[in-house]
Amino acid sequence: MDHVLAPRTDSRVRSPLVRRLLAEHSLDPAAISGTGSEGRITRDDVLRMISNAPEHPMTTSPNTIEGHWEKFSGIRAKTGERMLLSHATIPQVTTIISVDYENIARVRVARNPAFKSEFGFSLTYLPFIAYAVASALREYPKLNASVEDKGLRVHPNVDLGIAVDINHTGLMVPVIRTAQDLSITALARQMQELANGARDRKLSMDQITGSTFTITNVGAYGTIAGTPIINPPEVAILCVEGISKQPVVVEMPDGDTIGIHHMGALSLSWDHRAIDGAYAGEFLARTRTILQTTDWSHLV
Image (cartoon, rainbow, N blue to C red; front, side, top):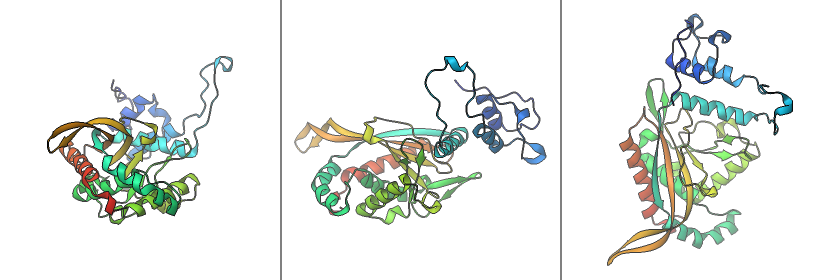
């Protein structure tokens, strides 16, 4: 059910978005200092009030509360702040497509022993997906963009953000610069180095800012589909879902047959201000085509 907008009881509340945030979080505008013109309460004023709310409100007698309380980590609080901003400001839609990864699976089986011996870590599906996404974004540039004011800034390079879980305390998004120019091996190595740096808290600010498109990967947990939240001001985020062996119809020259292939879904959340469903669908279809038809044996 949609939240009802807060009533117009304070002349400093002029924005429908601000009234909606006040209603969603049961905030009294009288308790908020406005920083806008003539003391107007802005979206940032409300978000600041939400983030500075009492950390451990006691609404029940301590003797009746079960479990224990944990303070949000700094990175968890920051993650929540950005996700709240995304939810409040972006008309988000999620589109999902199924992908046949069988060709990639076979290349991984053949190449992984030598790859792991040389680099010290396994060759996963993610570098292949990043390669396909970066290639498809060159053909669908409005998804490699940021919303600015009332317009769209389309970026010349694919600076690919890869969401990394920091031991369940929050997310960090290190950035692979000019991903469209990198090989599968280079993408894999940068992903590994940046993920390690993120978990060890050793990345510079330049390494975790300025992404133009983000990929998040929860497929290792066997997920089927999800609705990832866009990382503002970006236009889209792609979630890699679980990849598993499934029965599929295989088209053969002499007719269709049933085979066992590695299948998985890609979930794209996108900003409806920037594009429409047809554009998002075409981008996903193009990404799938690259993943399914590329001769990967010559690229790893």
